[in-house]
Length: 237
Image (cartoon, rainbow, N blue to C red; front, side, top):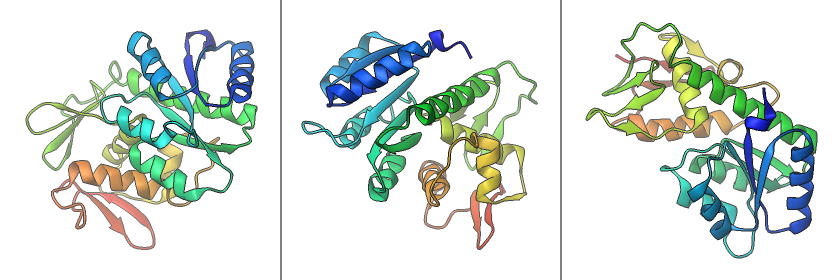
């Protein structure tokens, strides 16, 4: 990966953290822009193309979860949330809102770079699917269609449904494993990068988000079904 082509936006109210991340990532060849809060972040996004946002959750004026809520679903730029060590509730809420990953503070800089690379790699794979070999028919998810040629999920009226990179990757994995029960490890292996060590509920939360977008009744899913004690089954019928 050519790091110089990857633009990272770091948002943290602590100047020491911003400067540390900006210095480390810049030395690693990334283009890095820093913001001290939500207003500055939105201003940067309005005039710049950003590949990954690294954002603290606990900020005094406007917390990271509120900023993320304001971005989604219109802006699907991958977001890595920085959370207090062991704060699982913030991680769950962040994932439910559409965060792509999380990392506990104090930040391990090498691990942060690994997470950024994993997200960038997944995004690149998704984009390459526009020129890859496909049958051109797309995959049905109820009344929705996953168009792998265009790397989009299309609603019944033909409009595009906004997805995060991880949500698209999961749908693509299900489409490629029709009728096969997949456990959580298999889903992560095929949809993500194993440098990421998720907590137990991460896949469940993302599938719950997908069900809210796809299923007529998310409480009684028929498209992405739960196989108790094993995992999930994609059954478009």
